[in-house]
Length: 459
Image (cartoon, rainbow, N blue to C red; front, side):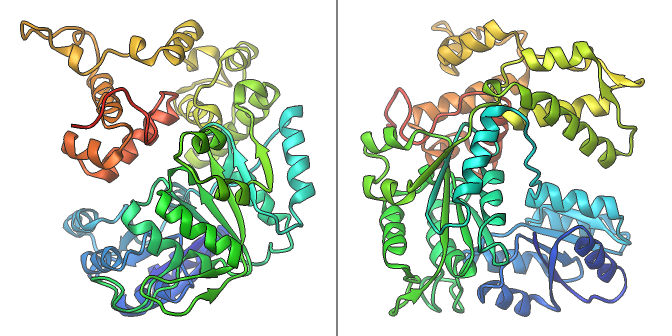
């Protein structure tokens, strides 16, 4: 992980830097906001920025937004001032880390904000076949399309490809096409020249140039707008990028790995994904099976997550009781490995004694889950059905606020044919809040409409 620390390295923030490096982070330092922005523009890049709270964090985050630089910011400070922490969070910082730094806290923040958990744990024969194919094709420069349901570990496989390739000592840059707003993604990928748009105060290199010589992961590429798909196709064909506002193409040497949780052939047939781009990306395809189709992975993954979260929370590493393991193996895991990880994390925190028993896991019944998957509208009351023709509320008593909120958000998204921006406007929430909630629902195994899916047109 690439960490940019902004502020004086004297004292405690220097200690935080050393802790981050000991945890495997590549640390770059900038003494002030202008030098930090210059580092980000120049292609050095960062997966996370840690900034001293004495600096103007609001100014820095505003500059990032104006220049279309997408990177999370964590504030840190030695002052015992809750107002500084609150101001940093209100300005847009993801977290506030008090100094002097705690090694485990720094590690937890790095993991939580930058999502740098890359262990590729498997035992099932089906997953072994996928990994064997990945090893075979890794040394080549061929584009690879990694497909599979959400939560199966597509990004981990992409990182594995890079680690086994001839480019392993060069950058691995990941871009989540679903998480970055459409208006920012073009600049994020291709960069821009000074004056290309309002706020473009200097040249900024995009992710293609950051990844030059290495690997670029285009995560959830099916979410990319078709206009950008056409520009991406040219980059792959010609091996050059055109910065926004630029007059000269820039040569790049990048291996492309793309992921999608949808069937891209079906997306092509529906006119939502370019056929020529699909064939350019799909030189080699790796299909990651859902967790329910690789049952031998459940036990080894559970043991891995038990160890991980026991150490992170300072508790004894417990083993699974036989009935607990049987219960895990019988579950169909609609949220796949991500759901299993969350389930184990909760069990580690809530269990007592020497083992983790089956009572630590509470699942929806398989029949109910299958019925919900087969007929989402039947399993989930719609927002409109909450009020009948006489104005009386129906179907809401006995449901939690979270359940009702989820039904409202997903029904609104269906109403908007999967358009996140329209849905957020109707709901009166930010697009970031909506994306976070949809990701949570997907992790929990609920069906989330994709762009173009829905039952009613937007008025």
